[in-house]
Each structure stands twice: as C-alpha cells, then as structure tokens.
Length: 142
Image (tube, rainbow, N blue to C red):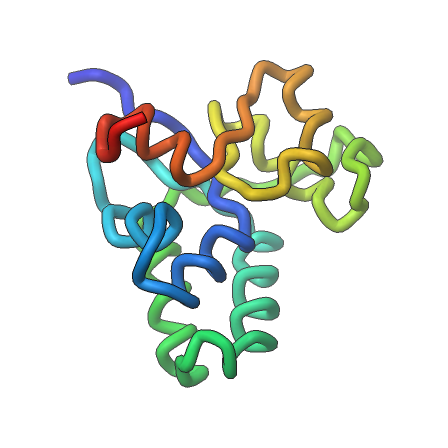
C-alpha cells in the first residue's frame, strides 16, 4: 500500500467548505475519510476551528452542536500531534505560527493563505489550495 499524503487543513478551508456545497473546499470535506491522505491536527488547531466556526455560525447556518459534531469527526479521523513551538516566530501573521509547527509533521498544508504561510516552504512543505490538492489526488481535472 502506498503511504497516504500527510496534510493539515487550514481553518479557512473548513469555513469555505461549510459555507457552500459548491467548490473544492466542500469536495475535500466530503472525502475526509479517504485513504489517500491523512489529516494532522493539534489542540491549538482544533481550538481555532471551534473559535472561527462558532464566530461565523450565522454564515454557515449550523448550530453549536453541529459544529461540535464536525470538529469531533475531524478529531476522530486525524493524527494528533503535540506541538513544541520550536519555529517561532516565522509566519507573517503570528497567529499562523502554530500551523507551521504542526506542518513539520505533514507534506502539505491545504489553505487559501499562501502569502502568510510561504515561510514553511523552506522545510519542504507545500502549500496547496483545495483545488490543487484535489487535482493531485485525481479527484478533479486540472
């Protein structure tokens, strides 16, 4: 069996996928249990998912319980990592540094925030949009 891609999904992708059932973010969320990739999370990332999704609750038309269920599902599927904060400060936005710390466990970060996360490329980690990642998987055509 081929080793699955190791990925981290940025909060902006989760939010975009929950806002609309159209587009690459939603498609990625709909295949989170796919064997071709493995999601990686940290406690800090899960707290960010929760904070942002509950703050944007009106936009995504979900209850707190729905959001908790989604986050619990991600936690169930994902590899859990303890973060040691060894690379700080590195990102343009200091709130993204924890993603860089977590990214050292993955090959790809799936995000719409290429500009702020650019420094992680020095560690051999690629930043892909959901569309680019789905193209890599062969889920959608280039």
